[in-house]
Image (cartoon, rainbow, N blue to C red; front, top):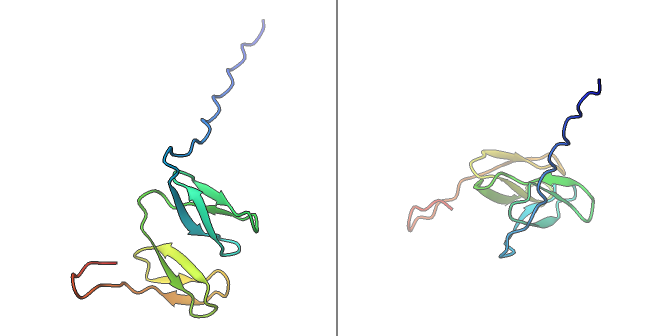
Length: 106
């Protein structure tokens, strides 16, 4: 008696970029270059070093600081208290910034 074959799994829908061409940016986890990517992407492959960098979930507020050890631009999730540099391993303090005029958190 023949065994029925299971249907092939449905392939994932191909990624379609937003119609308005919106882009966002993040720092490459390999070479620290700034990467531009279409909104909605889950990861980005760097054209310089081929490192794959995960994109933070939508709505995650990011912040930037310059490493005190090697002056590399670091991106981190807002609210972190410290950020370790992936280049020189310096632990940098991530200070919250407030404006005096309006008490609005930047």
